[in-house]
Length: 247
Image 1 (cartoon, rainbow, N blue to C red):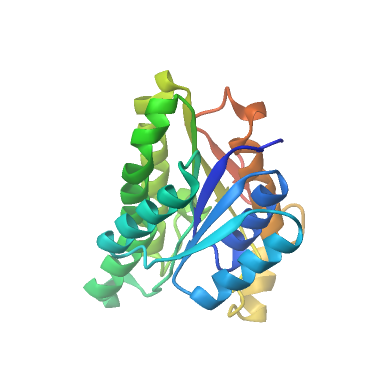
Image 2 (spheres, rainbow, N blue to C red; image 1 turned 120 degrees about the vertical axis):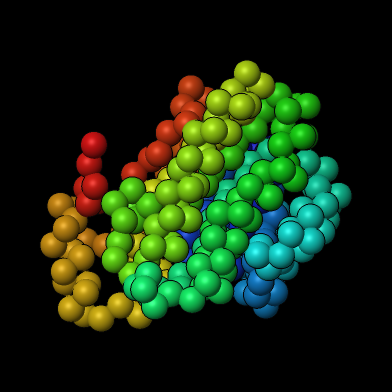
């Protein structure tokens, strides 16, 4: 999966799945633009990639802010000349039962998880169409496919990403641009670190492989979908969930 000469921009790159994707794509030869809110963590990742001979740069951004997205993407394109690969990974949770969920928490999750992906795609699609090559990867969730009590906002945002993926795949396929989604299951990240032992044990009972996933498991799937080896795959949702959801 050689990505030499490609430029990838990853949102939510400072930790977890985004961090793993950055390392994997850089190791595959891509130059990586790292976007997230935490500048310190981004700078540490840039340095880590540089020690392995890779190329990376940090672009601090709050993806819930349209103006910041436009500024960060413009800066990334100015520095690297293009963006060939977009990984929409940034995501948050604001869990609560619908009857108690505040509108602000609904809006925050939808804006960060779904609207930001639409805005990010708008920033890169023009150049992808001109060069007749591109890869768009949206990180969704098994809960966007199954739903989850207490996560109506999160599940809706992730289900929305699946619809966005399929619509974009149809819009740009004629220009050799693919758009796919990767749907993680129970992955060990900062987002899942706060789960109780009771919840973890219950969750593992739903995973036929009997273990939690790692950010690297997801990054490997993302790297494949970015590669030429996946050039005939578009509009697909690749489940990385240990068998938690099949079919």
